[in-house]
Length: 504
Image (cartoon, rainbow, N blue to C red; front, side, top):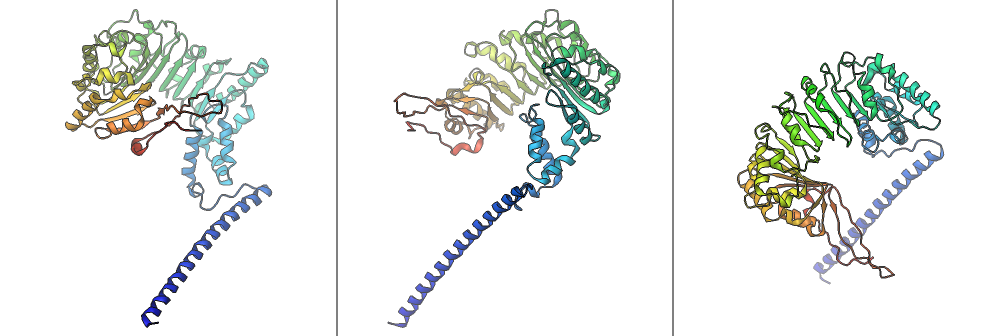
């Protein structure tokens, strides 16, 4: 054997030994990780057996968060739509407090997490007093829900006791929401609410409460929401309300005689919903000189738009209106009144397929300065489904949101893409968002994405995708399954959905 051959042999042995040691090192590291994991499990088990709160691992992210940030996270969790349900609001707080000693101390020591007081059957007087104490001097949000009729007299007594205790803290009320229920409001007549900013009243409670709305005792009131069948009173002209919502029943509400009173309010936001009798409303009779946002969910949009004088209006929402007349009739008398509108939510009245081009163009020209538009999928074709679209009149358009209903791939075909490309060539790239819509099998997400992402800023949110899937069952009976996906965003272009003959 030559010296060179001997050297090569030693090199091979050394490399083999190094590889063995490296494998051993990896095995030991894996073993160490397993041991540490097992040790943490045993620590928690011992803590549980000793009746202690389980110890959070030292590398837990939430364990290292500052108390202020952790408290804000708890606030978001407790005010989420699910957590705000009166049945589980307090239970959710108790669940969070049971996770660890630190979480419990954070919740108990933050008065802002104890400001929502719910008056209903499962909240007794001691619990309300706990909230009043732990919230310290923070402002309170009061929510009164329907009371149980089981043992009516006993329940009514408990309710009144709770409400009377809350009235002793009337100076701390920030908001109150009263749903339907047997609530006597006599104590409200003599109390003052210097910090009360928001009032929300439902059903007949609204009319009973309205008689107590003395502006002198409500100097901070800004938001008033009335959900009632028939409104007998409207806010007096001395009120400082800037946001007003009036929701009526399906029966015509005799509102016209009181609409003029709104002119004396400094409203910046107004929402009208339900069946409003507009038979005696006159054009330009309601002057809302500071109004910036107007939402109409009514059946007679035309008369209200003609009645209002709102030179500062920038946001108009008619998306959920029940108007059945043609666009030229609805918008015929307001061509120059709302040219300052920048955000527009609406749907075209009547069957979109039967609307003449001129009708749709008339609608677009009524609001020539819009920057942001919200429409349903059914309005895409009449608005944009032409070589020269009515929507081309919106020269300042920045974003288009399509929401509600079902989207077919044909709706975003060549004409829609040409519209977006025309905007792009002019240096006005449009942000397109599809939200809360259903995609049919013909309009698979990938195809829609690939069609549009190059000519607009595309976002897809809360999308439901229905995909037919073939199931093979023992009985041989066919079945169909609906597959839903949500929160789809722009970077999902690489996702492919295929469901051809899957066997289950």
